[in-house]
Length: 238
Image (tube, rainbow, N blue to C red; front, side, top):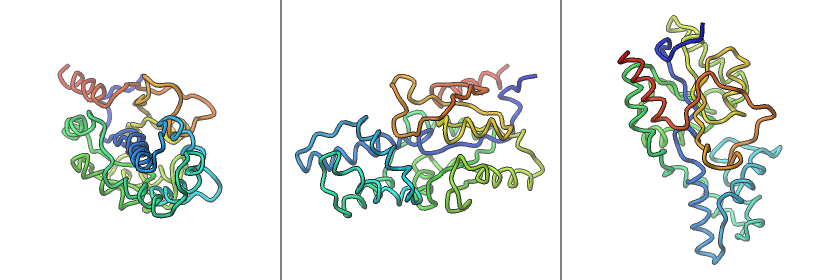
């Protein structure tokens, strides 16, 4: 039988792109730099360049890696390839905003579930993101904690071991994310139940997120966190 939203003890979340609007954060900073230099920056074009640069062989941990990424993409954007500007892009992560529905939805969901953050970001950035989101998480796992990034199964294994220490299993987790590549595909392969938050449902392409080789049909599908929270509320009232 298909699981109901009421069947889970934990909700695990991708953070950057699902809860935090990193695309707007990145493009806002790049457009600011562009304005100062008299250069008009196209947001979608910048995201396409970012996506390509982010996954080159010499990739580093995120968001520290944004310094390197900026130096790679700056010439194509018509911006100065200066390290100080790359550091500015990196540091902009400290002020990236939540999607408008994230804080309220998480607060509502935290009343029913234990919320676990699973982010490819480093711990310093996650602490900023968590504060922006109202510190809703029961537990958080970062690239620093796991030594890897999703979609590496090893990242997920850290979470499985954590819930096992509390007497639960991965069957008690609903994994919630916007990235087909980093989260939805691999969570299905690992036997998790998943929920796709299709943040770019009104936009073409994959923006700043790498395109998956194959599309994975999720177990649950919403276009916003608010819709997920509302669906959980309806189950609670039933």
